[in-house]
Length: 346
Image (cartoon, rainbow, N blue to C red; front, top):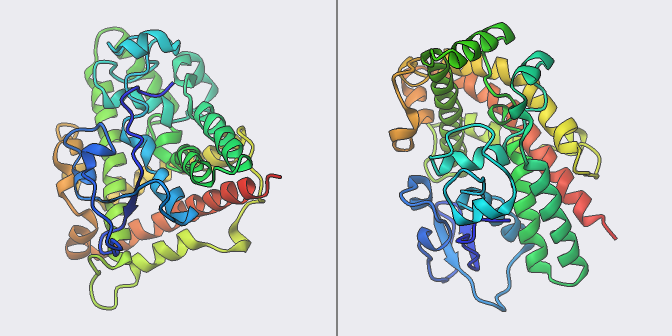
């Protein structure tokens, strides 16, 4: 039950500055259905052909980005799509069903660790499907690997891995980080009574902080990669790469069952969400993360918050790096645990 226009081209994604090995480039429109995505537009995709030799880690890394390329769009009954009407997922549980990109959110998030009273007041928050995708794509990966289809084994594995990695992001594991239970219930009650502004402001602020965190993270990692080096002697981006790499002493056991996405991966992300939200609100420029009248998603991709903070507020930049070291450690550890578990299957 993927969006029927999902792109299934043979391609590899390369980081900026990495060699193309003489392979032809493929435009982003051939790998994603998201028109106008500026991050995709700046990415580098190499065309592959059947029979080409490629490393499993390149296939896995490329595929782990693909579920954000449109395969989960328009799947709900009220999304106005022909496939949404027959797939059987029912109405979209939260978000705006009229906005295409909003429709993927309940499939990439898992709000299992809200307070019991919030879950009782808003049971629709539990209608999320990352476990479904993890189970489906892991089963396909294992089947393909056992059958000798190495390429598709690792591509399916990358698709499953995407949802595991998403659940290490605190804004995918808590619905409104930074708001206490009482405040959440109050603005929900106001919204039900027709006073929608407080809820709209809360959602905008959380969305802005979510996107700002990922902007800072992406640009810091690119700086560490070497495409755009940081200031002379700046080791901050390298700390993120080291956190991603981790080590045996930081990794969970080499096992992964579908229910670990909820109990092992999402739980610590949810527990850290309020502290993460406070750090972002304090460290990043207020115009991006404290103003509900600003929509970061409109032009945020044009910004480089890592470079901006390095010049305007180095102490805040370092606070963000400290925060991301913890998040990247979790991200790397769960990634390796998933892959080791897949490789250990008979």
